[in-house]
Image 1 (cartoon, rainbow, N blue to C red):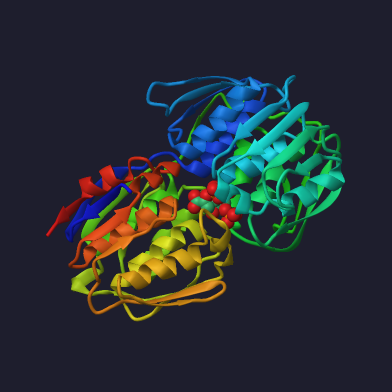
Image 2: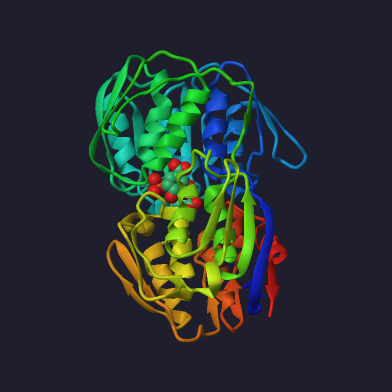
Length: 432
Ligand SMILES: O=C(O)C1=C[C@@H](OP(=O)(O)O)[C@@H](O)[C@H](O)C1
Ligand SMILES: C=C(OP(=O)(O)O)C(=O)O
């Protein structure tokens, strides 16, 4: 297997222009495809997850022009739900932000769609979304295990009314239903059935819908009311913010390697919850400076060490993984809680993080919904398995701040959201 050896690092310093946000790119593409008018999207992310969405829209017949560098996309919207005269099979890889929103959107129009993906996608639940779509008149069939993709959808439209949805496993189910709701045949009220995880992603969804002209009545994230029979309207141009989850690795590099490391594209004005990652680093002692459009991280003042934290990171599940590897260099035991849904993402992330941190010599407690990390006296050299999980490859690059070589197996898996990660990593780090 292909692997990358990272030699021990002395310092990190520099500036990074972040690639576009995955969450925003896929939401904006889908809304633009259904909107009335032409949307020019800039700073679109060029990565596997976005390619899966673009390929699907292309198969459905949505017209778009992609620039040579694939970061500008001019989409001609369909002025309504997506339709296809012939039955289509759409391959969505392991992109949650393509599978879940498309599953709801494709119920709205006309046609027969089979949604497939990588083997891991068939282990990632979707039942809570389908359970909300079926009572609204959708026709969705499980082709494999109940509650999991692959799916067959026969589009019949979705009715208005009131429906309950569970949000304790993934916020993407609510996101999917919200984005489809304006095109339902009547007004729709969505009621949360229990806890909602990863809540800031709902703010991203509502913000994107607003940019395409749709208002949602949000009653404290418990009830959402949306008028039916509406059409999204193209905002003409829309710029995708830099990816705040991708920013986390560079902010930690700045905090561990002296810095300053400045990431451009996310900041105080960002709609992405993962920008709050910088606050957790600050709590650990890092020096953080913000503007509306960039965030900068440096080591703690006066040569102090980072300190362990005990934090509920349910609101930033993706960036939270970077705290787990930053904790390798903090004094004390770091505990990250309320992260059960790490288990249903690209891999069982709680188990994978515990296994790989242990290889480095850390003492790790893997709870059902938490992880505790106590750093070793000296980080051991190890070959890190990445489980086809981009974030494991990226967050373990921080371990190179020890005194040993760190081998990252299958580094190419960063292509899911950040194909250029290791190039940029090399640009801002200096070896011992
Ligand atoms: O809506 C989104 O764009 C996302 C929501 C989160 O998933 P969950 O809601 O499943 O935690 C996050 O982990 C994922 O990378 C992107
Ligand atoms: C969980 C993630 O992705 P997905 O959009 O496939 O859920 C992620 O990017 O960390």
